[in-house]
Image 1 (cartoon, one colour):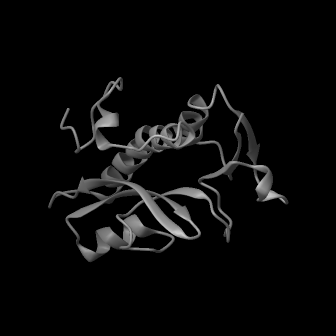
Image 2 (cartoon, rainbow, N blue to C red):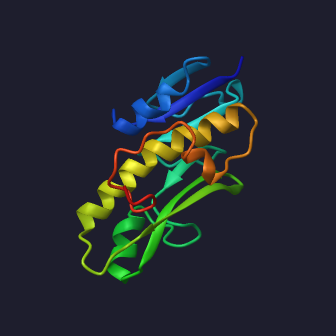
Length: 158
């Protein structure tokens, strides 16, 4: 059985969404980086506020390699880009596993785009984690299988 560490700094809907995919796995919730990271098959960063210099699975609010800052969405919004998105990747070495675009309308407000990104993270991050644990490739079509869209995302237009 795989052992998973989930690094977090605060309880969030994303943390709940990730945990919901881990019923069949042994996982630990950690507020500090583990002393022995090799004890874990997978380390997931869910809103962890500290710097990590190890191979960790993360979600970033831009289409990497663009906007590699602590506030990538704010930076993208201020730059006036029309397409941003989320990237799910391993940190060291950087290996991108999934990206999903978010289109920014001309009349968009920052808070609306942030809300959309948070929603997409709750949907996409757990699916990619599940695919990693099953050793299956992630395909954007996986979002359409068995997931009921509650609306609000620009990707599906519901």
